[in-house]
Length: 115
Image 1 (cartoon, helix red, strand yellow):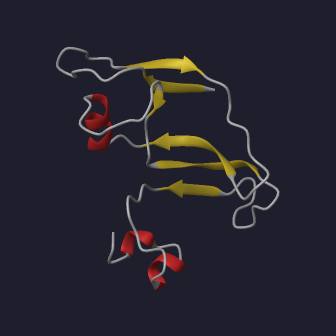
Image 2: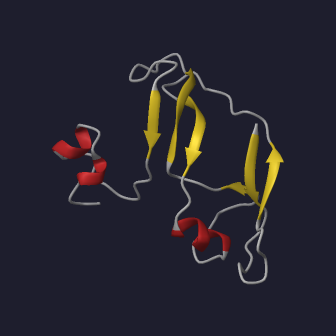
């Protein structure tokens, strides 16, 4: 599969093409409740700009950026029950939520007061 890889932080003023389109191995699905999502669309927001320019710490390089994704479930672990292969899914980025309120427990972490 292809991915846009960031190999190191850089200035967007000096480097107009900071990402390198690269062929990478397709991730494997574990035995747990993981699902593999074939990405149809990935949003780019200011978070990626901050990561590229080093304002948000990234623990290692190279890295595949992107955290707002829409796609289709293409594989699943043996214990995965919530989604089926072929389901259309959206993946949002939630930095913090309590994990215990009614919103979090119903899968609506974006409505959590702790978010």
